[in-house]
Image (cartoon, rainbow, N blue to C red; front, side, top):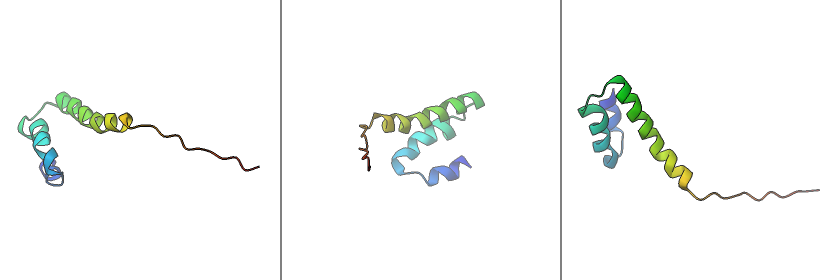
Length: 60
């Protein structure tokens, strides 16, 4: 199943994903730890973006 999922990933991510999950055949706990690290990568990028406040207007 993981091999099929890799086929749908962008090329620049495929090699790193294959190394982390397919070629190394991690144990269950190692697999979960790696999944969490993969999940945190985009979260850190999203959190690092500048925060914009949306002005609110009051209509009386």
